[in-house]
Amino acid sequence: MTDITKFKAIFSGLDIAYGTYRIKKERGDGKQAGQATVVRKPPIDELWEQHLVGVDPSLGIIPIRADNTCIWGCIDIDQYPFDHKGLVERLAAMKLPLVVCRSKSGGAHVFLFTREPTPARDFQAYLKNAAALLGEAGREIFPKQAEILVERGDTGNFLNLPYFGGDSGTRYAFNADGTAATLEEFYGLYEANVQDPGFAFPEPPKAPDAPIKDGPPCLQALCTQGVPEGTRNNALFNIGIYLKKAHPGSWEDQMVEHNFKYVSPPLPNNEVQLLVKQAGKKDYHYKCKDAPLNSFCNSGLCRTRKHGIGGSGPDSPEIASLSKYASEPPLWFLDINGRRIELDTDSLFLQAAFQKACMEKLNVLPPTLRKQDWEQMLNALLKEMIETEQITVASEDTSLTGRFMDLLEEFTTHMQNAMDREEIIMGRPWTDDDEAMTYFRMKDLESHLKRNNFVGLSAPKMAQRLRDMQGEPISLFLKGRTVRCWRIPRFEKQDAPFTTQTVRVQGAPF
Image (cartoon, rainbow, N blue to C red):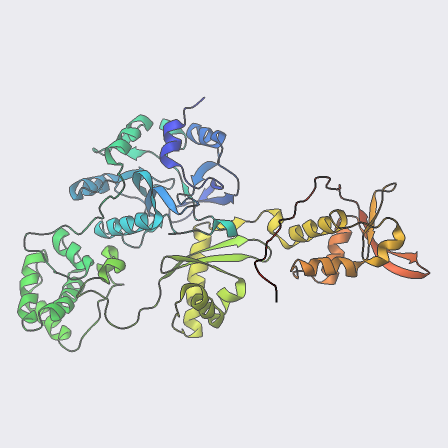
């Protein structure tokens, strides 16, 4: 039997669900395609053992726990092929305590570990900062949510674990020299990098003369690490935007100086003068979505900087990480400014209903978008949701049919039953023990459903559910008249008594 003790302790997460992924084929971009499933059951020891042995499907664990803490997180770099050794060397140079593993498709999973449960929000902030410093901004971060609504069916996103197949697999960690680490060597990498509570967040490394003071972290990183070839003009233009804010009286001369200090090789003087002239035409905003800034973007940190992207008017809320709980009807969960919100389909689809839900639950009013922009945003969220396999199949008892069957059983077994079939007209179900069938009027069942706030099925749909369980409509002659009833196979009666809580009311009720 494979020893899972250390591995399970390092990668433990949400204990009520797990993910599986069966690889079927390889896509054109190099990523392995397959079938992903979130299973709402505890990840038992057998699943961990099968993962390390290499029994398909591999195991995926959701890092965020029910109390919204984690002991591990990950930057998922979906790029193929990828220079893992180069990344390990950059991490060492920046003194970032992260462990690099090869993903199932050949990309990189860059892990952060802590000894004690730490708020998921802190994991997200640390890993986003680290990704920006590495020039990998915009990559998926796990945990993808800062909080989850477990009691409503929300589970968060799972990540496929490394070491599928143990030392014989291809999802291994990398040693400092870029060689594949055995599972035992991985445990050593873990011990060398695991963080204690209260770990410090990574900051852009400071050059001796502290470039881009109080400015965007992306420009700080570019000035200290070097501007990538082919992006020098755009980088220097954005440096000019910063200099106009920070040094309005001397920004033109400083733009020339920054070209010689931080752009390698420096741009020719005539190109620099063209950029100076262009930057001087008006007050531009930073071109955050263009290379090379986008690879080093840290918008959250940038908004706190004096000369960053903040302070230019009201910001649109940050909307991300849509997931679906496939109950009947479905529920949707969405991150807004790091807060988790539950929505029904109308509140997600209709912009006005969405804005109302945000006001009620988050005290935030998102700005109104054009219909085309709203639909484009929803399509992007839905596409990401499908690509990240964030659709959880609901259990039977959360579906409309499941809830209907529960209330039907309650009506026919837990309510006061008729002593004989004549009492059916008093609104009571009657069970014929000899034929093991229960009789009742549909309107009495509907009254019971209404008392329990169940309005999800129309009368024809309820009739179909009754037929599906071998029920049938029948006419009975009761108290001298014909009464339309339903007959269904009886449920086993609940013999255990039900207790009723007594509520004490202080003072007179009126």
